[in-house]
Length: 218
Image 1 (spheres, rainbow, N blue to C red):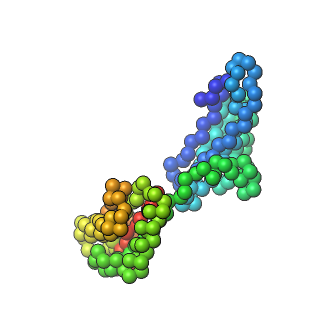
Image 2: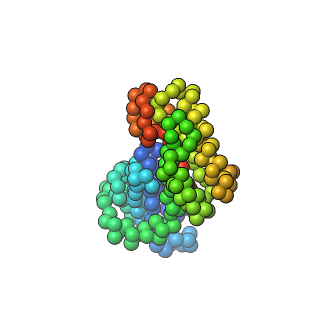
Image 3: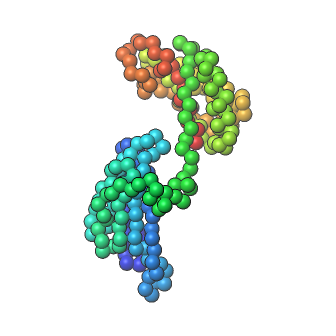
């Protein structure tokens, strides 16, 4: 709720699909009382989330509503007595001019890695052993405060066996990171077993790309 003329806009982010809403408020001097500036013009912009997904936002005040659901579209509210404008697409240069400081202040997108394992094993493939060093450097250089380590398997074996195998894989990666100096307290270890396959297969199918640990560094 904004003071002054007792008007408001609401920007609601969809929980499906992701997306980021940016808002710019342009102010003018308010008549006394009150002596403080009264927001008069607001611009709402929808941009993709770090994974490139776009959801939608709903811009509402007492005189109308607009839904923004396209990449780089914006809706502007001139005042409490003007309905939100129909969505329009902003050029990249215009986005930078209006929202440059806001975009620059956003935290860095999370870094993601996939480490692969040998068949029915907790042993990393040679390429993934090399990649592990880069994972550690990223955690160190970012000063990471949260690292997700999620184990996966292919569909060979029973569901219970695969859950335990992927948990051992995740714990193995966590142990290797701790040995290199990562604080174990920032590691969030999970097991998805044969759920959430990277490559969809039938049951009892060997697929090297599903035998993996996914790491996300914030």
